[in-house]
Every structure is written in C-alpha cells, then in structure tokens.
Image (cartoon, rainbow, N blue to C red; front, side, top):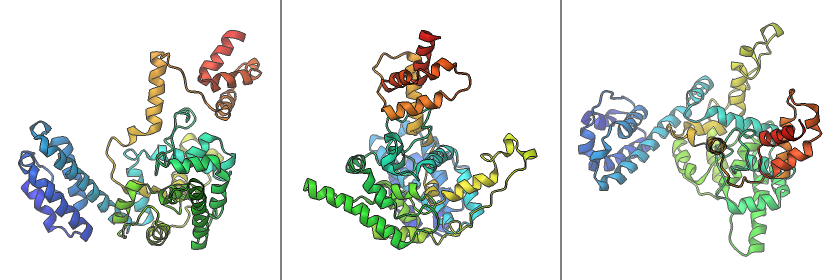
Length: 414
C-alpha cells in the first residue's frame, strides 16, 4: 500500500492532477493505518488507473467496521477527490482522442452510464424538436426541458428525461415555461436545426432567453437572473451535436476536465467562448458525418437492420457527440439503476403486484389519449373496442392503466 500511495510522485502529472494528488494525501493521512491493512495486488503506472484502483480499494477492500466515527468524513472526502482525479484523467484522453477512440470509449461506458437509455431519450427528443414547445404535450415539453414526473408513463417514456442535466430544481424556469412556452420557442428559433451554429445565433438566443427572466423580474420585483444551466439544457436538446448540457454540479468538474477557468451559472459568454470553444478544438468533434450503408434486401435481416447497424449506431453517436461528453465523467455502479425511469417503472410494477389501493394519479387528457391511441393500434384488438376509445381515455385519464381500462371494456362488452 505504501508503494501504491506514493507512486504518483513518479508519474508525469498535470497541474490539475498534481493538485488532486496533494488534496488526496490530506485525507489519506487520517486513514493511513486502515489503508495499510488493505492487501494491494495491482499498482498502476498512470494516474487515471491509480485513482480507479484506490477508489476500488476504498469501496470494496477497506474494512469499514474498523473505522472510527471521525474517519467517515475523511473517507468520503478522499473518494470524492479520487473521483475528480479519475474524471480529469478521462478528459485528458478526450482532449486528444480521434473519432474511433471516442466511439470505442463511449461504447465501453454503455452499462455504467446507461448509454442505451440516454440514446432513447435523445431519439425521442429528435422526434419532437421540430415542433414548437407551445404545441407539445406537457409531458413532452418536460422531456425536452429536463424534468421527470410521475406523469411520464414508463411504458411510453422508457428513459429518464433528466439525463445530461435535469432541471427539476429550476422552479422559476418551469413556471415561465408553463406560462409562456412560445417565448422560449422564439429564443430557440435562433439556433438552426442543422449546420453550424454561429456566435451570432447563440447571442440572439441568449438575448431572448435573458429577456424572459428580465420581464419576470420586473413583474415580481425580485432578482431572478437567467440561469445558464437551464439554457444549456434547452440548447443541448435543440442541438446535441453542438452544445454541452450543464447543471451546477457539473460546471466545476467540466471546467477542470477541459482545462478552462471555472465560470458562474450566469456567465453565458464564458460558456460559449471557453467551453464550447474548447470542445470545437477536439479531433473527434470535427469528425465528418459517418456514411450510412444501406443494406440490400437480401441482407436485410434482424442483425443488419438499420437500428442495429454499427454504421448507423456510429451516426447516432455523431449526431449527439457534444452532449455525450457526460460519459467522460466518473460513474459508479449505482448511477444507471438510479434512473428516474427505472425507479418509476419498478415502483409501478411493485404497486401492481401488491394490488395497492392507493388512489392513482390522474393523467392529462392529452397524455391519456396518446397512450390509448398507441394501444389501440394492436392488431389483435376486437373492432368494438375501437368504438370505446373515449371511454377508455376517460378511464386512463382518471388513473387506470391502459391495460386495466381495456380489460374493463372487454369484461363489459366482450
């Protein structure tokens, strides 16, 4: 263990990595006796793997029963610092990686970072982004803006809408979005759906976005500055190939990882000039759009279908390459299972199994209609059920599942 703890001294550390190491030593000291009791079999020779190994030892090998109460906080601080070091190491690779390495890395993170679920969110947003926010279902608008609710029926929204940068805590923003979605549409309209996004495009968006909050401040007589993090979520969903989605917790670590000065959550200029400007220097970001290989009819099997084609998978990653920078952040085995989608799904399934008598939450009429219309497209439904659509919608709106409502109609009229 002593050799492992001292090995970064022999490594070519960047200034940021050296700072992480010095900070780690401060918390290693009060844990030194406990750490010395841990058996070490692997001694990495680079800082990224050193952080990874020490994180593993602290989580899996350290005897927690022997820790004193006053050692709990130093252990937590040490793990946080090591996770930062791990992220910095991955971003060092991100800054120089060519496109093939970027793709391989993203795929390697698939399980830890719930990549498939994230891509389902991005695919869904891709289907609705050309529609004005004002014309979307409430649930779809929240999917775009990053707020997961119990109204997001897991059978339709099979993803956590808060991946990349949730906005649940941005209460003023969601109030304004509910009251005046057309104002946010006007701001987003400055960002083209294809091609390059220019500084002028971005500045026009920022101007309109900030004006929405200025008007609110004048009405409410209170200072509510336009939040950068919320704006980046909207921008990243509008153009996931151009923008990085931020929340307050990610700003610091992303700035460190990209080797730029940390900025505040209202500094729209630094976000564009420093963060997006740095992103645009990366080789993988400049990769030309991958060509789509159209399979012949003879080869059009399940293995070679468009959704499974490696080439088309690569194209999907390319179209979302900027927002996928999240996958360079540290993640542990708890991240993916804590998806709001998975937790809501499991909660609803457990309720169904236990036949809970708790009053079901009502859905909006628009959401109920969407779910019912999807169910009524099934080929095996009898004709008379199609004539009961309005009755089924009413049952679903009042809290029943689509399956329960259809089952009730079958029992009555079947």
